[in-house]
Image 1: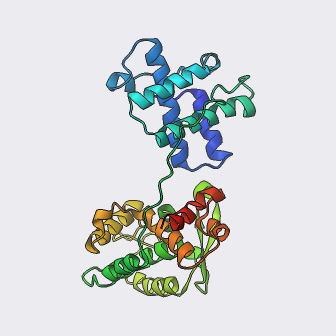
Image 2 (image 1 turned 90 degrees about the vertical axis):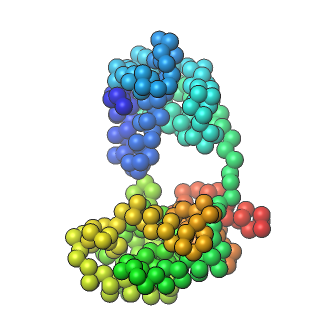
Image 3 (image 1 turned 135 degrees about the vertical axis):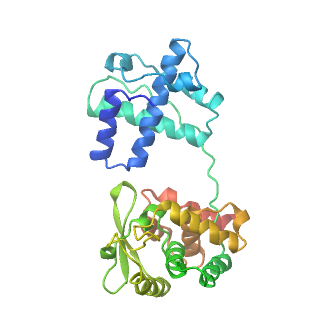
Length: 309
């Protein structure tokens, strides 16, 4: 991909350093904006809007004068393109619009370089909110039993602890992989995780989590460890990666007879939230804090799951 325009690079740095957005989120902003500018160039020069020639379009020379000429009609034209030619669904188009609105807002409000945000009045595509997939209580227990019974695996106790935390605490994959030994309190009653936007929160541990972690910490001492402070380590002694955890979860879901459910690691987070709400009768506002959600309406989807049932 060609180098992005200087104003986009400045925007990216602002989102990382000032707004504290995650690197993955900011990377997506930059990609969305690059595709947007490539499309405008391709359209105006009658170049292909897909394929290698499109990918090779250089947008590094896009400057403020060019950006000032962008209109609301250009943005609607772009969304017709990503819908028809790139076959972007509503959710992907909504994310691209968010990227554009954030970028133009940065130029208008923060830098005062443009008089008006051309994306401000563009309506976001209606995104159908699907109910989250999750495991039932019995299926969750079956998954844990499958791991517990895998006596041939030397990482069985580690994997059991990981899945126990997912199912009881509702943490994200990146949050779990990032846990350090120093994040766990001395009595193993709680631990600190680093969530989206580098926001810390405290996750409280129940007896099942404490027992599973205690067993793993004893076993952990028998491994050669390179990342001394990482709570969960790989076979190489390094901090366990997202991909390693994902592969482990898929393996045990398959062995537990749940491989045909199109489940993922994130669905274990949904499972924890759903079981907290349904079985544990956790108030939705408390659940919001447990999950680290910014907005209450994100958490309220779990109340809809109950209504649907």
